[in-house]
Image (cartoon, rainbow, N blue to C red):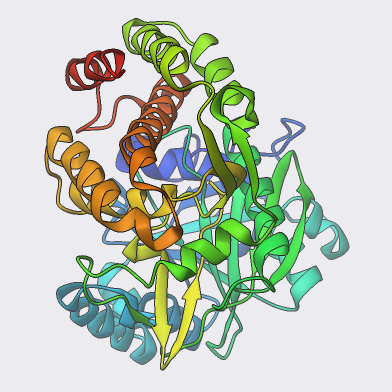
Length: 420
C-alpha cells in the first residue's frame, strides 16, 4: 500500500508527519491495495494525475492543501468565509486568495501534492478509490480545500468543497477510525434531530454514508458573508441553548437514575490511571449526597463556543454538532461556553476555567431555569463531563490537553469528594 509519500519522486523526509498522516486518513485504500499514489510534484511512472494540490506553505510545514482544479476554486478555498477568521488571518488569507486567482501563488510555492492512479484504471472506477470523485458523484463536480492539522487520533479531516467556479458546495467531515466515525455519525444525527427545532439556522445535511471504511458527512455551505461572534465575553441569549435542550424533549430524573450519570460512570470505569480513578471516587461521593436530586435532562450542543456559531445579518448560524447528546443536565452549554473561552481560547490555567464555570453556574443558570440550590451541583457535573472527555481523548492516543491533565485535575476532583 503506497499512499504515503514513500517511494515517490521525492523522499518522504521532505514532508511533515501531519501531512503524511492526512494522506493516510484520506487516500489509504480500505483493502490495502496500492491503487492511489500520493507523491510530491509529479506522478510515478505508469500513473495518471487525478488531483493536484498546492502545499501551503511547503511540505515540511504543511498547513493547507489548495486544490489546483481551477483558479477560482483555489482562490475560494483560502479566501472564502474570511469573516469567521481573526483580522490578522483574514488579511493574509485574502492576499493568498488573490495570488491563486491570478495564478502567481502556485508558481511561487512550487511544491505540489500529486494524487495519481494507474493509467489503466477506468474512469468509472475512480470514485471507488478517490474521495472527491465519490463526493462529486453525489453532489456534482467538487474540489476540496483541506486543512493539515497535527496528528491526533481524535481529529478528523475536514474538507471545504467548492465548484470549479469557486462557489461553495459544502463541508465534509471524514471519520477514519472508531473515535472519529462515532463523532461524524453523531453530527449527522444531531443535525437532523435539531435543525427544525431551534430559533437559529443549521447547515442542511446533504449526505451521510460510508465509503472505503470511512464515515462521511456533508453539510451545506454557510452563507458567504457570515461573520464570527464578535465578543466571547457576551454569550448568546440563554433561550437559544434552552431551545436546544428542549429540541428532543426534556425529562426530569434523579441524578442516579439518569442515562447521563450511568454513561459517565461506565466511561470512567472503563479507563485506567489516576485521573479516571479520582473521577470515580468523586462520582461516588456526589451520588451518595445528591443521587436522589431531581434534575432536568435534555440535549446539548456539546461544544457551545464562539467559534462554532456566526452571524449572517440577523440570522444566527450554528454548526459542529459532533459532541451533541440527548440527555445531559440542562445548562451544560452555558457552562461550556465560559470554560472553553477561558481554557481553549485564552489558554488560561484549569483553575481559571473551573472558576469561570462556577461563576457562570451562580449567575447564568437562572436563564435556563436551574434553581439556585442545584447550581453548584451542576458546575461539578459539568466538570466531571469535561474530565471524562479529556481522559477518553488521552487514552485514545491524543495525549493530555495542555491545560487539563492529572496534576491539575486531581485537586478539583478532591474538592468534589468533599461535596455534601
